[in-house]
Image (cartoon, rainbow, N blue to C red; front, top):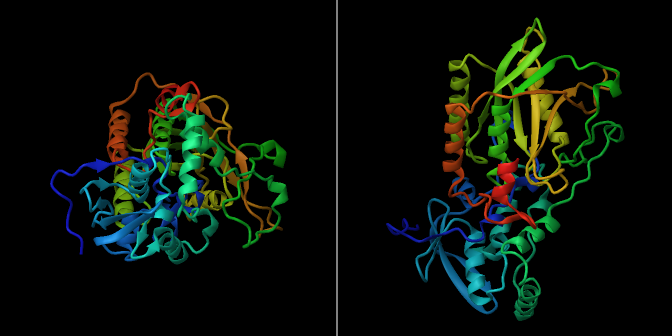
Length: 428
């Protein structure tokens, strides 16, 4: 079994932008419980810590290896999911951080590490363990989204990388990485609801669906919605911090007399995929916060980090489930608002995130096997007079939570040729 790292190790976070692959393409987050759909749990990237917790790998000395351009590197897998490079004792937060560092020593022009395909655990690529995890815990996941390109390169790859670096040496620092990210983002074309037809188990649950208008289905919006600016700020800030999906609750009040849903507070979930113990504790804390503030649960939000802020088929089912759950057993009507935030989709207008409030209309009674109809919700945004201490405190907690995360956004990199990630979040 591996020992703990030295008392003051040098932690290397290089390569963090692509280190933790997002589950199922990283475009959906849903409301789940440990046994299925239900309470909120973020669908985050599968990390070494997740594989350790579920017993697919074990910590140990010298169990990790990288073979690159004739050079061999050996690492220890620590009990917290970090990697210690045997040769120097340096600590790395993820496979990609370690792979990027080692490959740059051999080939300084190397831009990324492809860690899950490059790092081997006891002779097998880590990406194979990730696939095994998905087969076991997410059998419906799209396996093609978690496979990575074989990264056993030869000397020719190194030459090509040097040539590419020379070609781009006059660009701004970090801009090349952003442009590569833009080209390799998975382009997902939304479909119209009318093309879906009857529910089909073979259909990709991550298919995005265009929103309909209430008027298009001969209905009126059955409630009014007001959302405070502090809610938008905290939600958008949360979504900007990480390249993985995030999810959270919305707290507020429902007035049956005026049919007005007022969203007054966002409650970000600070938890990781498959960390069921942590998820339960976070949910309990949020429930207590709702109660102490005299608020009710009125909805949820999640991010599509690099994709359009439109619901997937899975999001539609989750939203429908939660509408029914909030309605309760007395058949009284209380709306449940869903919000999708798209911070880093290059199809957005300008640098601001796209914020999409939506609701789901049940399918017609004569077609019970159809999908629910996702519709756009008209919302009034109310400007708060000041930023509350609650929101500021929550923002600081989020920063602390993601500070050492491998999927933390690198804010000094460029979002577009003249705008850094930090500039983007300020404007948004």
